[in-house]
Length: 103
Image (tube, rainbow, N blue to C red; front, top):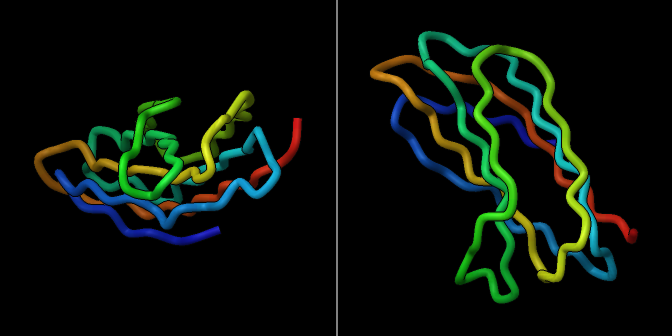
């Protein structure tokens, strides 16, 4: 898991996680603090070359807590998370995990 601080209007992405022989991934997000931001948008992105990324799953989190999803049928070589802080001001502190597995 990686810890990340995010400010309003910031868009950032995690490092790419190689799927190896996996075709599914568990994604876990913990928002530890959501101060004055209206939400944090999380997008699971897929790529075969770490250059061109396409969106697979997204969610908007509006309060501190835990969110998890299992994405199956992944045909890409890499997975990453893109985070966007939504709001006029404020910060969020979160931790994220991407765990590939074979379905």
